[in-house]
Length: 239
Image (cartoon, rainbow, N blue to C red; front, side, top):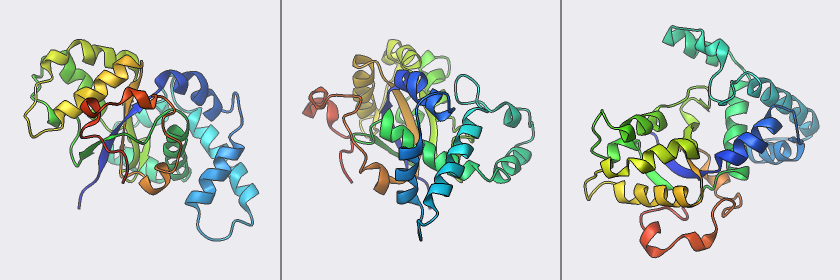
């Protein structure tokens, strides 16, 4: 058994300007989105849905406010130096599972498109290229391949993202993105071109709830006319 990783386009500007403040409870209202999320993720009776919605939102807001401005670093978690102690910390954080599942759902509802995406399978983005450790491209790719433990639960969910600014460094060093014909390198370069042209970033996930995410609206961040037979070959458009 293994895990299934995917790479998607990500509107980081909308994420930081609109989504993060809503997740922190500073603006907007998560009620309707939380109701939709719970109806698709919770089995059994929904009699007490209203109470569950309020509790879930409180948990989401609580964890969201524990992150730094990048929305990637939790200061309390970072203070724990021992790996096993870090895992225990997350396991004892009862609200972590709900947060990660809602975060995955909310990201793809608002600022990322599930389709099209690049199927990375069990590997990451770096293994698609012959990268020299000294290159800027290697440094950027390494960041994307680094799983953020606070964003996924039990190896399922969002693993990391690159902002458009991060991606520009990768784009400027794309001559170092050399790859074999049997890799997904060419397809990843096509996705990089689309991200560059539309001022977007990348986001990665692992073993996400594809059956739910594929039903969310697509073409939110990239117009359908962006894609051609040349630049969309190898991308996944449906399951």
